[in-house]
Amino acid sequence: MLGSQSFSFIFSKSALDRPLTLDDLEEIDSHLFTGLRWTLQNDAEDLLQTFSYQSDFLGKRYVIELVPEGSKIPVTNRNKQLYVKLLAMSKMQKEIASEIESFLFGFNQVLSSCTLQNFSPRELEAVIAGASKIDIQDMKKYTKVSSDYSEEFLDWFWELLEEFDENERSAFVYYISGSTNVSHGGFKDQPIALHYMNDSEKLPVAHTW
Image (cartoon, rainbow, N blue to C red; front, side, top):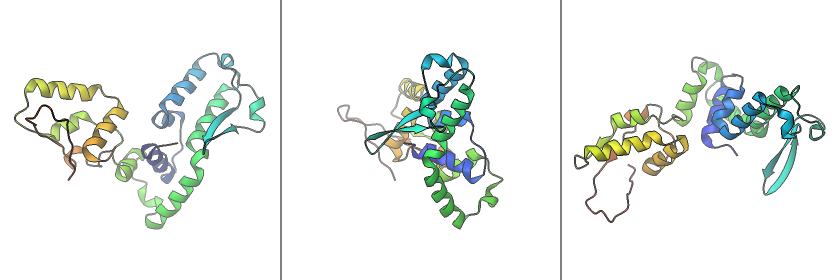
């Protein structure tokens, strides 16, 4: 199932009538993207894969065929590009086609897509759902820090956040703000504050305002 970040990205491209590409899959499902890219660059016949895949829905597993009788058609080095394209499009479009259609119908009642053409898909996504990429340098620039913290501690704190992947950064932002994304204006519009606690036995706490 796609998260809100993935859905908002697909929606933004759909609202602007921009075609999805294999590269878009990296943001939506990085593991699948890596696997499909490996398939394109290596001997696909070793995978013993067919033009089908399995999907779980309400506790049941279903076989999804990418073409008629796809479960009987093996993926070879000659047809692997078609397989990769069909699987990527199935994941990014077909599986959530009804959701995208309903979302666009409601959205266009309020704001016509023709008025959005000056936006890039990334800009529109940021306006709708907030920035999907969390910029630690931007966070650092606007964070209000208690004077009680040592420079050594702050260096360690920011270095640790820089090492986080996007999921870990989103989890941190969710802990301190209640949202996994940052507003369109970045941390300038959504600054955080670090307050020193004298009681070393207490666990860290977060407050939103």
